[in-house]
Amino acid sequence: MRSLWFGAALAALLVAGCGEGGKKALTVGFSQIGAESAWRTAETKSIREEAAKRGVDLKFSDAQGDQEKQIAALRSFIAQRVDAIILAPKVEDGWEPVLREAQRARIPVVLVDRGVNVTDDSLYATLIASDFVDEGRRAAEWLVKKMGGKGNIVQLEGTSGSAPANDRKKGFEAVIAKRPEMKIIKSQDGDFARDKGQEVMEAFIRAEGKKIQAVYAHNDDMAIGAIQALDAAGMNPGKDVLVISIDAVRGAFEAMIAGKLNATVECNPLLGPDAFDAVEKVLRGEALPKKMVVKDSFFEQGTAAEDIKTRQY
Image 1 (cartoon, rainbow, N blue to C red):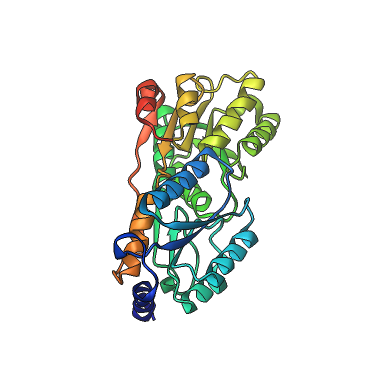
Image 2 (image 1 turned 30 degrees about the horizontal axis):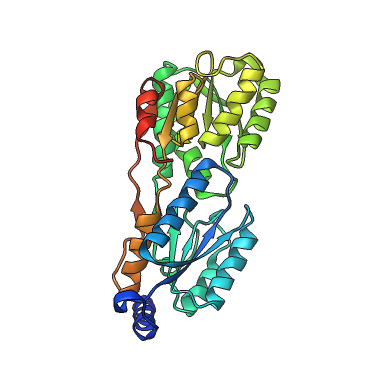
């Protein structure tokens, strides 16, 4: 099935009209989850800019956080006979039927930043993403060191059912479970959103108050919301309450410079070049690994003022 898919995609390129220099201008559909965070906005910008740079006709759809709208967008792309689809899936489950439709139409799908649960991995060409489990693990290891192996933590989880939320929780909790004097006393979905992160943190503070010694947020936006709640409660984030998050967007560096956020694990959103490299390769019939892992860094408060000077997002 896979070789037929690649071959048909390549044949479609050869018989279609050509652009400058005899090279066909690709048409690619991009289904984005939404704009719930600075990270997501940076990813969209990267994909849009790379499409423009390569002369790709990009069909963009913002699902505003609704998986059904993403599925409808994919069906629209299929009906338009795009050359390929780039998909950032909101959650892991529920994609198999529409991905089978894309496969029957011989339109390859490249996943970015989040994976899917399917019974047949030939339904997508590749996944380009960070190692979310490792991100959670690194955050936990940092907290273990900073807290001396004991203390109470609250966790702000990402969107329920999404790959980063599942994996960042898994990696973090696996490390904390080995430390009997470290406890996750509260954990709740904050939907990767700043306002929801603040709301959930306010509830944690009402329930646990001064028992909270550290906050682990699955992304920077929720961490910034949590910091606002801690500030309002007079709980001195960054000093009396340690705060660590994931993404390494500009707002996180600003919060570290202000002394409110202690550290952030990078999750690079600049996936445009890799995504379009993958699209071009699959349309040429080249085999791709099922997952391409993005290399990420780790940043702490002490170097944030220098680090921010080189940040692109």
